[in-house]
Image (cartoon, rainbow, N blue to C red; front, side, top):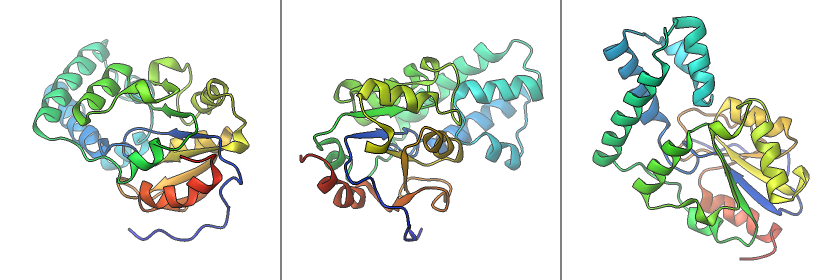
Length: 228
């Protein structure tokens, strides 16, 4: 995937970094889509068309289930579907370790507070983190689906992250891969970077700045922070 040049510059000073999780830090979005669509069809006789899967891409799980309840009538099966999804995902992670972004260690070493804002549940996030040898401990804030009353594309998660990190939107940078996530960060007033390495869709035209990998982003970001 070619990364086109962007016109909007990075903030002159970056005092906080905020990350989406799936397909930004770790390449799990395709796994989620395959497992969830297969589970819905195979065990619950709920079919999602490719267009519907595209519509749901990037929404928090609460938003996905709200859509399913409205359009597929789950008849109280939401807890059962989620329990089975967590089971099949846990088994998938045992068999196949997902890829992580190239250069993340460089980004994490930058001397600015960092946060995660994700539509994953906390149990799911911790399960994936364990599979890739990562911990929440290095982040100043981690906001999951259940932590926000309104998920992406609403900006609540990113606005709360700014508050927890004690920074202004103009001094933060968000890394996102999905249309709802990019929209949420933009509505929060934060510059949005698209990392193409793990992304399952090309959202480069919707972001403010684009990089192939986090190693490329580090080259551009490091001099705008206070050092490493």
